[in-house]
Amino acid sequence: MTSPPTAGTRPDEVRRHNRAALLRRLHVAGPCTRETLASELGLNRSTIKTLVDGLAEDGLVEERLPAQRSGAGRPSLLVLPQPQAAVVLAVDIRVEQVATALVGIGGDILGRCSWSLRRKTREPREVFTKIIDTSELLIEELAVDVVAVGVSVPGTVRKSDGLVHEAPNLHWSNVALGDWLGRTLHRPVHVGNDAELGALAEHLRGVARGASDVVYVTADVGVGGGVISNGSSMRGSGGYVGEIGHMVVNPHGRQCYCGCRGCWETEVGEHALSRALGIPEDSPRGAIVAELRGLVGKPDETLSRLGDFGEWLAVGLVNVVNLLCPQLVVLGDLFTALPDVLVEQVGRKVRERSLVSRALGGTRIVTSSLGSDVKLLGAAELAFEPVLASW
Ligand SMILES: [Zn+2]
Image 1 (cartoon, helix red, strand yellow):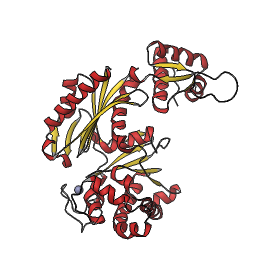
Image 2 (cartoon, protein in one colour):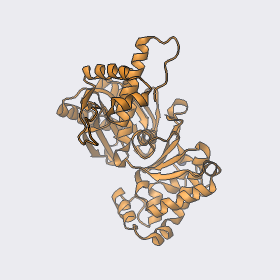
Image 3 (tube, helix red, strand yellow):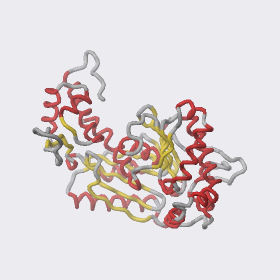
């Protein structure tokens, strides 16, 4: 819903504000009729007609009859965003893999490419060069113009210039990634923490759509958190918010690379899950997922093998919920492979033990609905945010 213009606002500013709000509505929530736009944006029909006609002239939207007709009479035209009219480059850097994609307005992935990161090829300059090479190939293949770039990194990122301060599981420190990419691609580059971007994607396009207060928990080799507070990303000073994987939950636990002992990450990260499953700590992701799939339909065995793991998951989540008061916690990445019976048990424990959850009538604990694309989509949204605001 757009906010009403303030008194004294100039007509061209009002028009720009309304145009951006309409485009954002179509981008995030998909095609709809002019009537729906008028009602959702609180604007009259003639204003909507002028805005839609202007956007169509600029090639950003088109109007089309719906593919499926409902009811009698002439169906209303749908207003659709034109994906090729505004395309961003999204990059998802993970510990084991990098993915790049071109994402059009409306959120469709138009083309993609990914490659594995072996220990020896994680050197920042090598990753940077490969991102540039694959992006140029994708752009050439699709023959599109890229308006901005969004990048997801599993580490602490300075919002102002995309400096990766620390990405411990990649062994990166003080990498000027935003600066390097901006100088080579000659486009605005926005770099964000992977959990922050997971939260953004789930909030706009996934299971947390419509919720104003959300925590997304990422679980790759490391564990992190992204927070949507009152409908916006919480970024903290410098953009470094969300290192919930380094909450100390077990003072008698294992030593963590961050300098503390018994961080949540050491109790519920990928290595901890492998230990809980009784497989080697450095098992590949595929082996962990296969082991978890083998537990489907075996609730007793699941809870007996993963009961302690689930307890640590609940302990950390109670802290997170008490601190941030979300309506919804979304478990991402490796946690999406956890058997339902375990997730349900963890959810019950959090609701029983958290004061905040009891006051809210029960925080929901759910798994991500966007699969492995969640951070790519989040990186695309990070790039789209300023683009949509300026149109
Ligand atoms: Zn730690």
